[in-house]
Figure 1 (cartoon, one colour):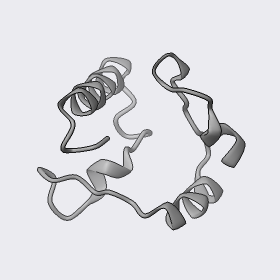
Figure 2 (tube, helix red, strand yellow):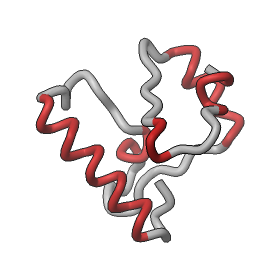
Figure 3 (cartoon, helix red, strand yellow):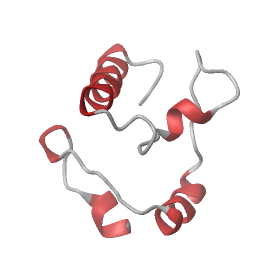
Length: 75
């Protein structure tokens, strides 16, 4: 999410709530939460995305809020 965009952060919080509702907090991580300051979030550089796809077991793409699913092709 973009920490400067209120709508983006609201969507991110709804995904966090869904993760909790489903009880998968231990199995599912958001990169944004992994930074040194939990209040600011962690924004990754585009060059790191490919590495993250390679080490991931699953890639979740909520298509109802996204345009063309380029991340699916990149994965």
